[in-house]
Amino acid sequence: MNSDELKGKWNQLKGSAKAQWGKLTDDELAEIEGNQDKLVGKIQEKYGIAREEAEKQVENWRDAA
Image 1 (tube, rainbow, N blue to C red):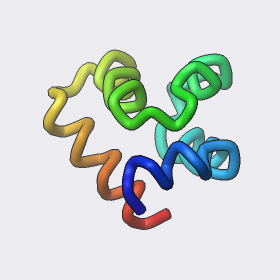
Image 2: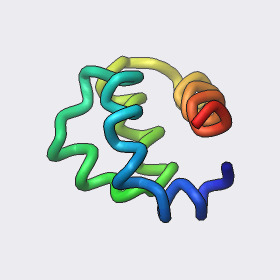
Image 3: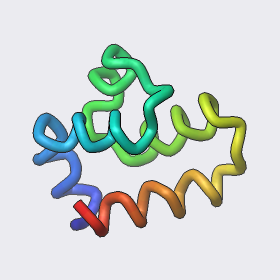
Image 4: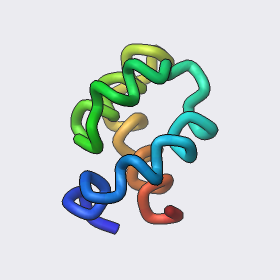
């Protein structure tokens, strides 16, 4: 799944994202709106990890979805 598909399927994938990254709130997930860069940034912020690690986590999650 690419980032355009992520945007299109975001409403269906929000639950999966919430399960993967439980620290993200429903409001934050709504704000992300399927934007991969926003998702990476929020994960980076909430979990205190490097951008590269957050990107890797999102890519792995997105590819598995």
